[in-house]
Image (tube, rainbow, N blue to C red; front, side):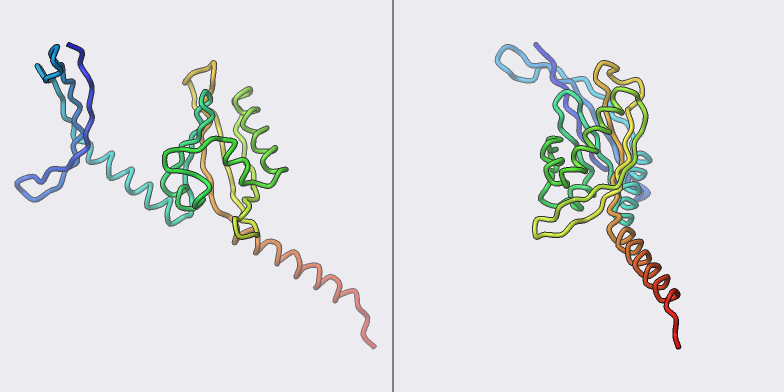
Length: 193
């Protein structure tokens, strides 16, 4: 019979009360009637990896930062849970098409991001840019997007991945400072008698 691989992440409590995370992979062979006839498996303690991933996700949530990966063949983007939450209804936890995400940006920024992705795939050079995300209720948010190619994976269709961070507050502060600077310069040029 043909073997199907199944993977499961679970936790166990040791005799001393310590919780450990275990990843189990099993290959189940089935007979002609589809009943399991043989199983071979392996378990691995992945506690440290699990804790690192959990710490990363928590840090991303605090920093309003997340990661994304673009599959070059399907043109679908896999979003981290933090980006799904940050981008709200514009993206899906199961992934979204690149075109769906580009449609949520201003036309100029959509063209810039698409061009940067294509250039990164062609040259391997990373990109970094701030984009305007259109809010469904009006207004915009600003996102800092960093992207690069994953090394050594599918040279015929390079995977692009990166981070995205909400920088709306920073951009708004910089604009206010610019306005204050202009007003101060104008006030300085006035002559009082």
